[in-house]
Amino acid sequence: MKSIGTLYQSGDWKGEKHVPVIHAPETVKSGEPIEVKVIIGEEIPHPNTLEHYIGWVKVYFFAEDAKFPVEIGNYDFSAHGENGLFTEPNITTRFTTEKSGTIFATSYCNIHGLWENSVELKVE
Image (cartoon, rainbow, N blue to C red):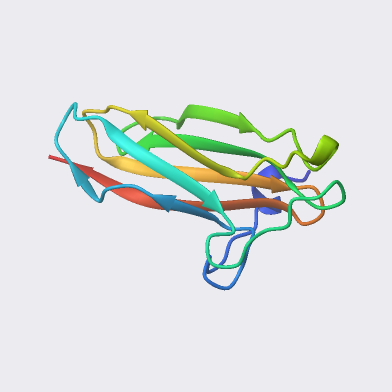
């Protein structure tokens, strides 16, 4: 049996335009709002055409003592050139937590598949 986890790819976002780049603070105070930005193609822009595009980004938080991660948000990018409109695969979201853990971002390219990245978050 195959596992979807084995289908996710990762790499150095400075040399790979598909890896979600996560901008978030390393340390926050308990209950303080946390702003997270996820950008696909920060160093090397990702194409956004009818033929080649990022379809979605998902952001999760996995608290260090939790059983499973919680989805913070699911962001679909629907415009890939129709009527001259192009959606940029960048999002900003905010959340609060009282626990340290890991922020995960996943994305989907219609040609190159699933991609992932993560950063650690320390709550004081």
